[in-house]
Length: 208
Image 1 (cartoon, rainbow, N blue to C red):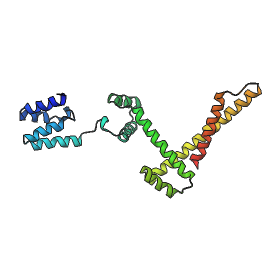
Image 2 (cartoon, rainbow, N blue to C red; image 1 turned 30 degrees about the horizontal axis):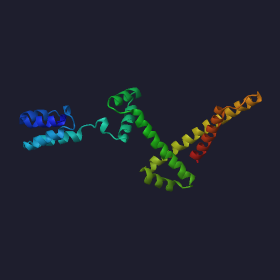
Image 3 (cartoon, one colour; image 1 turned 60 degrees about the vertical axis):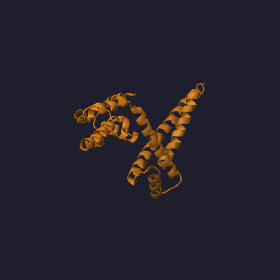
Image 4 (cartoon, rainbow, N blue to C red; image 1 turned 90 degrees about the horizontal axis):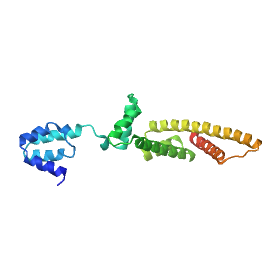
């Protein structure tokens, strides 16, 4: 017999007054136990008290474990906006079995997917109305939310262009200097130029 079975059996043996006393403080009970307490109260014709427990379950704040990733992400944003430090939020979530970095990483992945999809729609030559409709049907985004994404995508594109051109120019100058002095271009330099070219390509795609 596991722990919950022992508690259920104990409820059956308690007097009605003892059960009512326990039911007065539902916040002190395990959530998975409350339905069994309700059942025992119903068996003893204490319907009003049993229904009050249902009201408690409906109105009580959700625990972190019960929140969806979207709800957790919104919770983190609200706490940051209120001025709470990231370290404090991270510690609180960790104590409740939630990894804040996993939540933020998931959100970043979703945002990147919407950016990539939006950029691909632009590359296909769709007009704003068609893009808005596609974003709505695919990601359930409103026209205003899509407009915000468009602005964010352009800003990201400009950033990629700046970084890309900077890498190519700087590494290009270093390469010329190195070759003129009888040196050679290392793998790191070639990779940096490649990354710069990729950034430039992404930047143009995102700012169209």
